[in-house]
Amino acid sequence: MEDQITLPRVEIETRSFITKVYGWMTAGLAMTGLVSLYMASDPTLIIQLVSHKILFYGIMFTELGLVFSLAGWVHRMSTTAATMAFLLYAGLTGITLSTIFLAYTNASIASTFFITAATFGAMSFYGAVTKTDLTAFGNICFMALLGVILASVVNIFLNSSAIYWITTYLGILVFVGLTAYDTQRIKAMSALGDEDAERRASITGALALYLDFINLFIMTLRLTGRRR
Image (cartoon, rainbow, N blue to C red; front, side):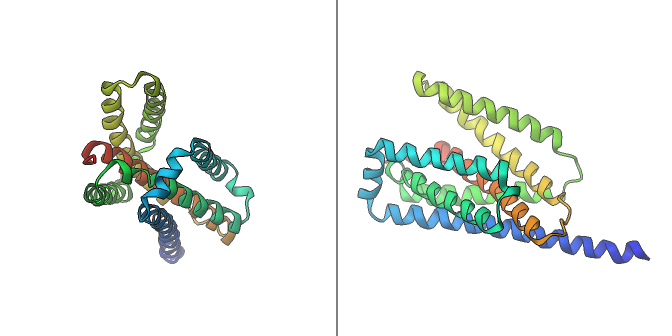
């Protein structure tokens, strides 16, 4: 009898937590999209951004700092600080991501977004419903991601088209896999009880899914986008 009463409560709390995670992820994507569209409305803003290398790379390093802060020290932050850090990261990503409007047509960017959304939705659904433990698969994807990052850095100096396309295809597979893995990992999180701790955990989960979506979008755009 006790189990029958407890189980629905656990399910309700789990669904509530997942709803918060996807809510924050959506808010982050909305922030990124609005900032990117604002920058794209005046191409001179993007040109000025690209022209000022110090500013551009300064924003990128700030993004990295925010990601590492949220990933490593979010439990020490207040809920307000964690929320602001996440939204600030999403806004800065919108600034740097706006450079795609110089390289790709608006139509291909829009179509790639919908392709990414459909792929992300399908893999997230799979991660939520599958009974297979994806932990080992997620670890493989993470190791492959490190390889993609390393190869991409090396290719800055080599400028090899073969490495470019290999990292593109592999990157798509990696982030498709990570989407399913991260969804399952977030679903497995138990209710934390403490409201502040749950809020910080939902921000961390939202960040993971946000990164999966953004990187999947970028990799897919490299494959399907039509250059200007």
